[in-house]
Length: 451
Image (cartoon, rainbow, N blue to C red; front, top):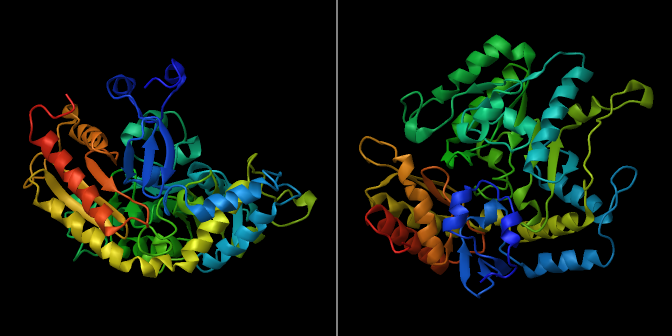
């Protein structure tokens, strides 16, 4: 159905090969409800990845929709310099109450990348205001923190970052805690987080110049949902404290209950110096992000006009009233439902179903935490030989699943599931059934049904 003739030819899609658009035109989505989105022909798709991990309570949630509609009748936006919208003020109290201990100062922006940019600038100026010349950052290999320039400088996925790393300031990268292919040859059940010896080595040489260490806690998302033990995160935090380096916790993807805890850093009882949140903050309704930090850091920016210590940063839609209204209602629902406790049985069911993928010959690793599940596809299960990239099996599997009404999207050789928390057991069963069926049709069939 060509709804708006020629219009699609003007769109530059993110993370999309132009040839794929020709072969697989994207469905035009008209509406959503609960776990599903519906295209203009009426076909429904179960959204198994929360539309890039933002839909924590499902599409078109009646309470969040009402909160936004009610706010729209009052105020759409007011600048946050000398003014503040009432929902944004209310949200600040909610966030401070729910955040890990000590993170009571909140700076708003509009997406995960900008939250990270704020964190990096905040760390740099914090040390400068203290009279210390700390201008470098350390990050984990395989990390992803957004697509703006500062955020990319601390990312380390070659397909996303290699071109740009050659063109701006270099940061320091240490081992990825990639347990399936451990860089130290250890087993995650018995290791001593030796992968972070590389972090200790960098700190030993450069700590006097390092402003901060940024990590995705417990799960490195965009590189393929690399899930690692809490002891790794605990060691990172210990090293940051020992070497007087700020720990920046990027909770953009995993915050607000996704890992079974309200914030992923809670798995290791870690309270970072700076924390970034976004995605699930507004329930997937509107762009909004926040960078939270401590009073100790905030106080280094305090002073009169002549001191020049203020944080010279802001965005046009910082603290937007509509987004804040959505965020307030989302957080209220998460609080009322005690999301980190009430999900326990659903998480167990979800993880038990996910483990059955291990029976497939082409699945090398099954990993999960909370309502995050991933399967890594391999060419040889025993040797862990990687897939041949030119075959594009994960991409074709996702297209086959789409034909069957399941919305998934691979990350390299990894298929993953990050459904909204409202998913039922029956929907979990169907989601996994279609995913398995799609894998079998593509991986084991010369001519899959889509051709």
